[in-house]
Length: 147
Image 1 (cartoon, rainbow, N blue to C red):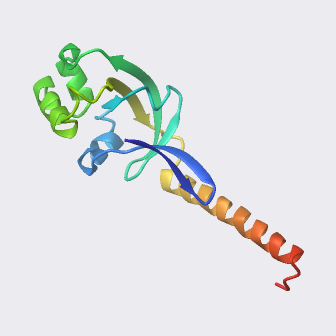
Image 2 (tube, one colour; image 1 turned 90 degrees about the vertical axis):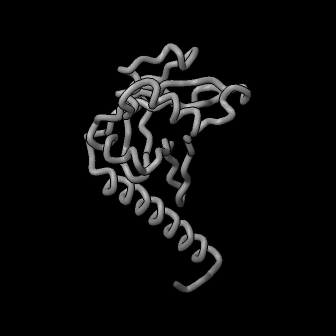
C-alpha cells in the first residue's frame, strides 16, 4: 500500500510492508514488491518512507502482464524461495485480483543509505512543528495576545 503521509505539514510518500519483510528489506535481500494498482502510484527516482524500515529509493516500476511471466529470480528478489511461494502469498494478499480491474506492478527499490532514516524524519517533523509554532505565535501577536 502506498500512502501520502501528512504530519504537521510534512508530506511524504509511503510504501507499506508487512512486518515480516522489514529485516529482509533492511538487509537488502528483498528488493522488489508486487503491487495491485489501477495505475502506478510511485515513480522511479522517488524517495518513500517505509515505517519500520526507513527511507527507500525506487529504482523502477514495471507493469507485469501476468503472474505466469514471473520467475524464481523474481520471487527471490521479492523475499520468497520460489515463484510458487510468491504466487500463493499474492493470492492470499489480493484475493480479488482476478476481478478487481487493477494491474500488477513490480516495484524495485533499495534502502536509502544516505541518512539515518529516524533522524531525518524527526528533523523534518521538528522543522514543521517549529514553523507551525512560529505561525501561531505571529497570529497571536496580531490579535494582541501578550505571549
